Length: 353
Ligand code: MEV
Image (cartoon, rainbow, N blue to C red):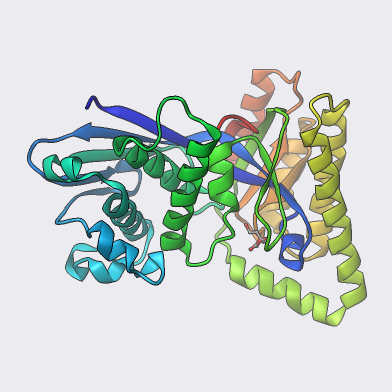
């Protein structure tokens, strides 16, 4: 078989973070920042995994058998099938190796197991920034392995995507234990998705690719602590916090309807207002950060309204770029953000899976 590349995008939450924990809707979209998995055949029977973005270049011993994988109670238990000495300590390298061992062990046909392969993944999705880097990895890996097994083809049917999504979800379970499934759904299907806790993500049909600047403040955050802080605030002020959650949920529902409508008029104007409002509501929940507010001041001066994306408390923000905005304006905002020590990624949200 000839070498080939499978790729999948990262994601950003557009509306609804935190309120989604309380059963409200959220909307997420795919990013044009992607992970690219290059698979190359070998003849020496080895399984080489190279991930230059996280300094991993390793050759695995034997892969677990498909039967051993099928007998696991939870995909995360795959670690018990591997030699502990070969695995790095906690961190993205360990997670990636376990995900690879799980998916390759389950999906690789016997002929490829015997001859071996090299898998190299380059990712333009920043790791650990809440932008779905592990799902981009999982989806590109699942797509590549399913293709090697002849279970997905260049035809790229809806059923084939569903299969990729299902296997990528198991990869996400290896990485995160009990993920919601939204990240792998966005990375598989692309576009925009609405989701509420406990039900499967709903794809929002129409294509409205939207220019954004993603800014990583590089301020470390703990999602767990931020979610707990919001809960404590709600315990103190239940009626007030519940009405903020309702307001955030309403913004997400409204955006979901507009993204589903191919002819959505004045979508850009609507989103600009909604982004600013959603951020203000998140700030009221106490999950903004001076770095995020600084980012918003800089982007607002360039007529790009911004909100935090993900858990807040640092981490990432996204700014909407006017559709008619010049590339020089984007470069100017990125230069100012970089001067603050922030990373800046001009990208498009809502593109291909
Ligand atoms: C974090 O990316 C999103 C939160 O809503 C937490 C969650 O949904 O689990 C803050």
